[in-house]
Image (cartoon, rainbow, N blue to C red; front, side):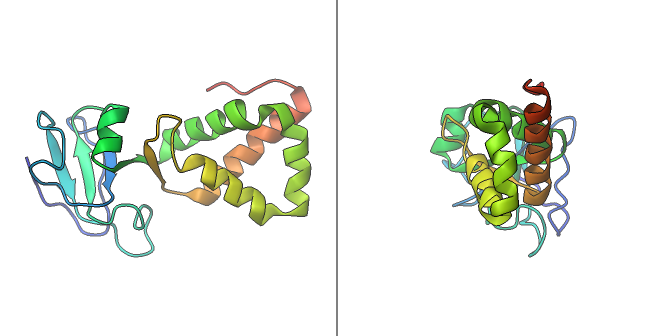
Length: 160
């Protein structure tokens, strides 16, 4: 099911379509999405809005979460905002940075820009290869820094 939406990337999640994906390399069309998927499509976000770069062909609102294989096969990027942003930050800290949390916190003072690039690069894809579109990269970096500081001061990982 195809529907047009409001311009400006206002693709809110709804009860019927709670999962959001950026249509990265092609528009929604027959053969470009799983055949059994119930979905709606919103237009590409406006320039300068979150997800503009990744959602080149619009935003897919899906009735179910896609499998990793589906997201990879159809070149869809999971859209990360809100609570999912905090979950991603916790995952980056706990799974990739926890062993050297103190060193990462120290490196912030030496080269914050390089640290930010590293965090954003870690967020680009899941371990299963699914692309991610992060709505607010600065907020993600801030959440990772907060998590690393907590780990460095307490020695405990943060809850996912």
